[in-house]
Length: 306
Image (cartoon, rainbow, N blue to C red; front, side, top):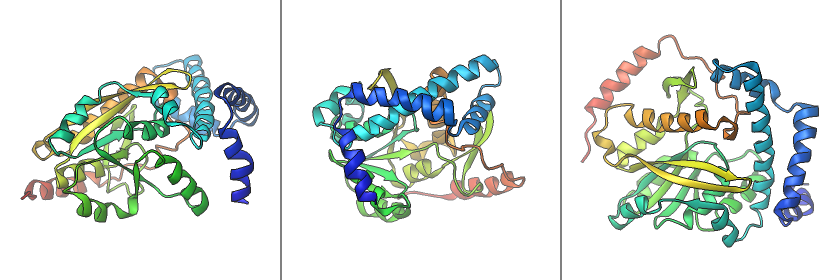
């Protein structure tokens, strides 16, 4: 059945011109959002809680703009199963590749952090073609093996290699001496509220993955935030912004605070391009979290690097 769906629907759709795909997106907006109301309660609640100073009318405007972009994103990802290299480069341009290429010339590896913002899937394809590092993408495997393989093939078609979150420790130990760029999506909800960095994000107590900071310090990786902007329908630009090139010199939490604040600034400026369907705030901060944090900070201060 999966094979049938892919070759009878997904693959043929991916070969359609963008104009036709955006007509499909417009239809999905009216059918799935207006009539069915797909995840509308989750999206509405997330937007209200994130922007308490906005009016109900402004909340609704953000919601509608988000769903319009969301269905564009769906058809654009489908298109990526057949997208040409020329089209990738035309539709997602890196404005300042020289920032990270300078580190490649110094044989310094980098961590590139981004949220689920604009079309992050197109960015994954485009960035490998515009920087000098070999790129690796950290991903969470899908439960369906067939679609996990198809998505992996799509994401890696122009050179990026993928690494499962389950194998991160082995991956870094194996390639820590190589000159690479590793991509992290940093805005998903950690499953363990204790093994997270808690901070106020979009006016709410929010657990944040701490892995990017931890691994940056452990393996002395330059940290860069990827600021993605939507120029117009189907076209994006990316600006790299340095978070830290001496991560081991940063105090506990500084790297995490910086990259999360960079994402928050993106969302506040143009909230419709973030993935609001995600149940980002489904966990509460543990009452004894500060006790755990104090112990973790003390252990971190004792850590030395050879």
